[in-house]
Image 1 (cartoon, rainbow, N blue to C red):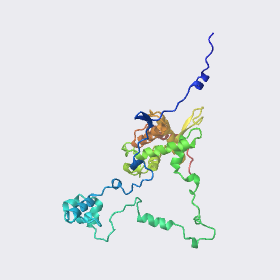
Image 2 (image 1 turned 180 degrees about the vertical axis):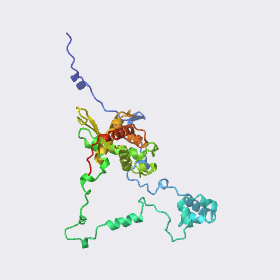
Image 3 (image 1 turned 45 degrees about the horizontal axis):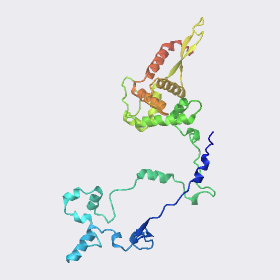
Image 4 (image 1 turned 30 degrees about the horizontal axis):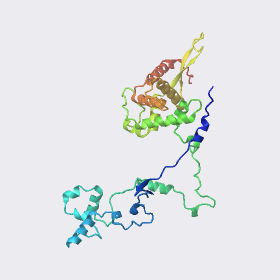
Length: 333
């Protein structure tokens, strides 16, 4: 058998030779050529700050002044330029084409530096500033010792608590759309719903299914998404529920009895109806905001009177009117 080849020993036999420097043959003698060197650009200690080629070119005015100096004529002044207002002072057509800022500066007769506009990005409201100044705490001289930010006003309002920082309808809706105790996911969906209500066009209210009396115009609803949501929930919230009482009619026959509901109970049923109708909608996209988008579209359809939730509300009220004869009221003497 032929001997095995060991590839590891091959590089050891290779001889590395450096590259031969460039050389030239002059008069039969081999001499080394030195690399080319540009004294202007390659010399490390050369001072090129005063070289004419490194100086910036002058402006049009400076060039005109130099030309006038050479020819012996009168050129433009370099110390002070001519303002644009003085150039177009007698030209009405040129003034109309100027920017708004320069037009105001020409028309204004106030002192130099004054302007009739504001460049601040903060909207100044005198009434708001007055309220802010009125609500500011008193100076440190009038505060009791040891107090830095002022004492709270007493009595403390009932809603001045961490649990009451959200609107009651928004909090109830958020808790009902929460799944598996994931409150942060429910709050994110709630934020997407309110954002969609805020950016959606004004709804078209149906005269056959009006909203609550005293509600704002449809064009004002997107400006306040919390009111938008509350109005949709309260408009379809049923006033009662039907309770089936066994044996009330005799012989084990159940009797339908209408029971009035409180505000929180009415809103809970309305939100459950909206959730049931939203789950039947087709998802128009993918991602985390699909469910929130369907809920927002269902709320808009409720306000416009196109949702099937209105039929549920009407059916419950019809049953309540038919079952009111089953109520046994006490005899008044």
